[in-house]
Every structure is written in structure tokens, then in C-alpha cells.
Image (tube, rainbow, N blue to C red; front, side, top):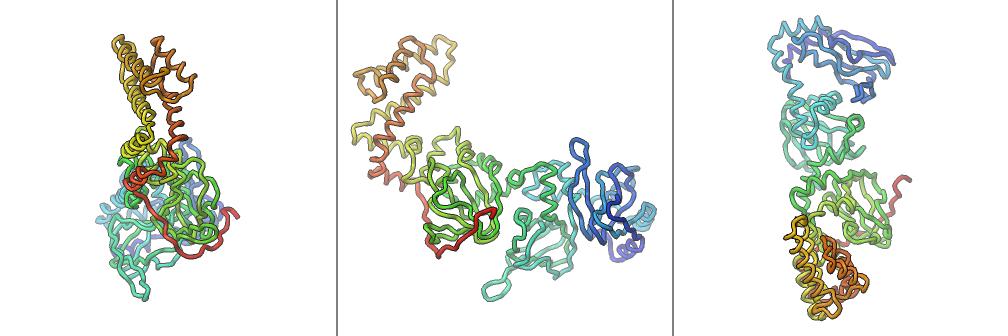
Length: 530
């Protein structure tokens, strides 16, 4: 792709064989960069420099990798030092190109200078175009480049077949590839084409031994860049990057395309935060994710694979890629799992904890309420109802039929009072008077014994509020404890009745929901780690 056939033959003649015994260094960091190497037998260990300046093992490379290619980029830049060290893990058979041979080759073929100079910068550019690598620093991109392999294909050559085990991720440097899959009759169906800068196979980086879901074949001559799973894991370790953090752009895209009903309430800007908090988990086939009756606080999305859902030993659903489960745990306190979930193939799950999920809505309780109502249904809590615009309207309508609407009215007014207090400058006498006036009116309307709309709070709470307001010491938190107490009261006295009412049915119809389809009988799985 840089050399023509004649150049390749000339280049090959200039290569010299070299044997390096096990444990010996082929080249060391800091040495003058002079020679280019191709590994044709054995195994090489690569060591890189850490932030602290120490040398650390990075990864192994196997035939037919090459290293020292920077000599072609830097052939006119004077003395350049090697950035990494290479050691023979076992006795290695190498082909090397000396500085003298390289200079002769470039002199005889001056047309290769431009393509050789741009080759490495093009590789970095392509790495940056991969969605889940786009935010890497230049240092990290250079580190990943060290672990790349190069694979050339002739037109019609198959890279891998559907059903093969995958361990490599690929980026198309040049050329075109076809993606095909066999239908039930054994006929090949064209799924699509891949061209320059497109990538595929990232599942292989996360899940060892996963089978390829399609066949990839070159439709023209092609050059591919590839990363093995073991090298990618070493890259994550040495750079101290989290896989979920690295994959955030792909995770965001996946969630947006998933049609998860309750995600509709999540603001656009929060998707990035959700992706950053996602944990990527991998499972072998027939592993138990959780068991019916377990207490859980994780929501799961199937990024790859299949998951069986069984209740009392009978499978009620077989969830494919793109499905989700465990969402009740996000919004219902201390609820046991209602089913057992077992993987039915090698599987990748994206999980979100209840605590992290709630943080996305810290300043948007109304949006969280909509999510909670969609998920929890009849298991919803009182806060989900009163923070939801339609929920609080229907709950108030119900309370009026019970002649108990003063509680919800009080809740509304003390929330308004707190917002007012936070907006005022209490170092100003005028603002202090304004807050005192509002607090006094609330006490007279809802708190004092015999008040017009007296609420049912404890005598101790009532006395504490009256004393604070009468002394002119009111603040933003004056009614906070009574607000919590009134919510607890409504939950205990009225929530159960409300859930049996027509108003609650209207609320459930307005927020929507989803159902689980019944499927085939469940199998047994094995506990993780056994």
C-alpha cells in the first residue's frame, strides 16, 4: 500500500536475518533509533516508560509484527532515540533493515518518502476517528499504536467467518470489505460494506472467545489495523483507563437507539454522565446474574448476548441484545428480585447502580418521578407521585374526595417558601421581613392549633416551628422537618387508597409501561465463580 511489487522485492533483498536468544534485549529505550525489525519467529516482550519514569511490561507481540518503523518517518531528522524496549521472551528469528540499507532503499525509491512520512500520522488519525478512542490523549494514542498489528487482504480473501472465535478489533486503513451472514437456507445475505476509517469487532476486546456474528470478506485489496484483546487489556491497565469510560460514546449511542421507555425522561446532557457511570460486565454462557429473591440495586442492559428470565424455575422470557432488566431495583426500596436471570451465551452487560441513577436527577426531581412511575407502577412511592405534574394533580383530586387536601396544599406551600428563602439575601432587612411575613402566614394557616387548614403534625414539631417564627429566627429550613413528616403521613394514610382509585389508573395510563413476554421453559445455570 506504500510499495509497489518491485519495491517489495527490492526491500526484501535488503533484509538480513538475525537470531536473538531468550531473555536478551533486541533494543532498549534511549538507544539510537537505527534499525527496522520484522519478527518472523518467537515472541517479543515490549516494555514502556510509566509516568514515574520506570520501565513497565506492556504486552507481547508475535509473528509477523514489526517495530522500529519510526526510522522511516525520522530518516531526515537526525538522531532519534527509541521510546520503548523490546526483549526476546523466547528465542526470536528476526529480519532487520540496517540504517545503510534503509538509506539506499529511500535513495533508489524517492517516491516512497511522502507515503512513509504520512503513514504513522494517518494511523493516529484513524485511531482518533474510532468513536470509543476519540477522546484519548496523543500519548495514549501513541501507546496504543505500539500494540497494533497490520493485516493485508487480497480481493475475495476472507478475514473471518461467521461462527469463528474473535480476539481482534479491526480498523480499515484502506480498501473495502463486505459483511455477510447466512440465512436459514444457507444463502449468504449482504449486510453492508466497510470502507476507510470504519471499524468492527469491538466486542472481541471485551469478551474472550466470543463468536463472530457475520463473515467479513475483502471486496478489494485492503489493509487493516488490528488490536488483540490481550494487548487492549494491557493498554487499559498501563494507562489506568476504565473500559466503561473509554466506551462512553458507544454506550451513549447504544442507549439512545435502545427505545428504553423510561429513558425518554432523561435530559440529553445526562446521557454522557450515565455512560461514564456504566460498568461493563462480561459473563460466560449459563452464568447466574442474580437469583429470584435476592436484593438488588443494579439495572442491566444487554450489550451483547442473551439472558434467560425465569420465575419459580420456569422461563418466562429470553432477552436478546438490546433488551434490559432489573430496572425495578433503580426506584423501589429494598425490593427482592422477582426472577432469576441467567446468561444463555457469552454476554456483555452494561450496569447502572441505583445510587448513580438517582444522581442524574439531583436537580430534576420531576424527571426522576416520571422515570420512577414508568418503572415501579403500583410499587411507586409517594414522592414519585407528588413530584410528577400529572401525579400530583390526580393525587390532589383524590384527596379532595377524602376531605384531606390540606396536607398536599401545605406541602406545595412550604416548598414554595423554601425556594423563596433561597432566593433572598437575608443580610438585607427588607428580605428578612419578606421571609418572616411568609413564614407567619404559613403558621397561621396550617400550624397553630385551630388554624383554618391545620395539618396533622406532631405537637413537638408544631411547637418548634411556632417558637422559631415567633422569635423571628425563620430560615430556609424552618419547615423542612414538617415537610418530611407530612409526606410520611400521606404515604401511610392515603397512598394505599390512592393506588386503588380511578385517579391512579389514569396516572398509570398517562405515564405508560411495558410487559414481559412469556417464552420457553428455563434451564439451570451455574453461579458465577463456580
